Length: 246
Image (spheres, helix red, strand yellow):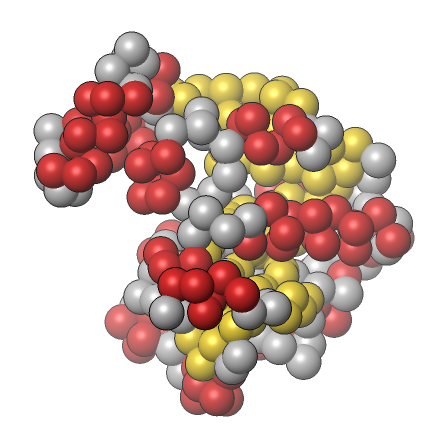
């Protein structure tokens, strides 16, 4: 089965008006046939008492204004990889992340007045902000995240963006990357990104400590002991903001 997955040619598509994914991949892959149902109502909207379909309408308006709001990787009829992006100015206006499954972001996205979206020509600078990368577990370590990012870079260059920001990079520590998602500083540097700031993230630090103590399984604990014992908890918990200028 593993060899079969690796030999398949994946389809990469922009998340635009024709393909809106209003949820993330925390629970696994999502069939394309599920999208109609999800655009009508998500479990997050139901849980937080938000109007049904509000997140899909938001992402559709963002896509209509700027051409797209993300990139997905598809195997056959299943979405197995996702990255979301939007203008940095919009992220600043939201004052939160671009993830519809985080409660604060879900509520702010749900209440955002899309008539106030700045037009592309009004963006200054024309900076794109990548919020997250997700590849479901059985497809990781196959270069899917890197391919989604490269295709996003190509799209941004072709459509008049001046630079790309990504604020969720970590050191290249495999169990940490697998748990938190995202890409490593080293991988991003190979694509031309530069570090512009860094900070210790307490949430990530908690994950590092729990992995080292074996709460994520003995195999994960063993990897930390054998490969990363020389890295302190604080060093491993640094989150980097990176920038690629065109």
